[in-house]
Length: 342
Image (tube, rainbow, N blue to C red; front, side, top):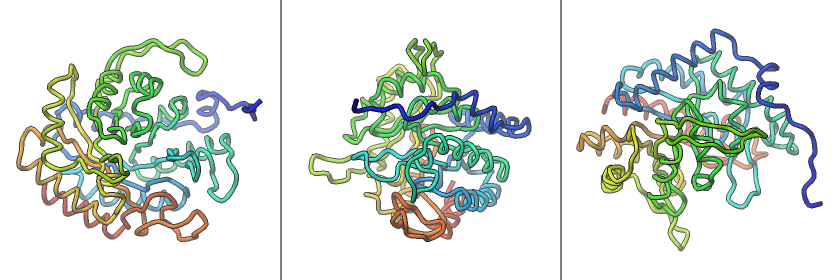
């Protein structure tokens, strides 16, 4: 057979028994979820920053970064609500390369997904305990949700997964905001249809069960840029793109119109240094147009301790081993400058 079943993986409940969330951390999660919900339903006008490493590759470096981020988040909390990126699964265009801590707890060693499940849960819990900030992660595999549904406060569905039925239906059963990225083609309608699926109720098979969901009213759009037929990046963060999205939303039967703009990926052409400029242009568009201000709830920024990226075996502490990231000094400056612009 071409596929071999290697080992049985514990259920979400079994993993949670091994690495439980304390009552104190559960209370932090509940408070954070409510704060974030209020922004997406329009009861709080603070601006969201979903910010952190492209991939959470090393627990100590990630938690070091999160502790730095928490201090700045507290300084700007009247204007900005920070949601750390702790991305533990990484989609790969060809399937090759480092796929995140879930696959490889140690990026230099072979895959071990059982140890990966333990590692991502321990890291997320440590980050909450040390910083008081619950995080965002990408749902690369829909069945992963059962392992982290009690610790995440935001979920992103990537450009390659957004058309997948199982991802859409699983999103409809989540109780936190779920961002649907535009596909790599840039088609807004695909993204909007994913939001419709996420906001509606469904019955489907999930992890060996027949599952029923109530729909997630916090399902929304993420603009991340696109690729044309020549493989060239096309941005969609400009004023005209945001106006188009605002007008497109009116054509669909959706509640809680909302958008997060990803300042990296094809919006920056993966030129990480462009992210501060892009974020400031988005702020300008919000300040110019009240409808865009109500629609655009925040941004995504890829940021780590050191600028740029390196090979998996590069050995530089706090430097991305996937997409290049903005370094810490520039990150701190960006957060403070944006707070002054809001």
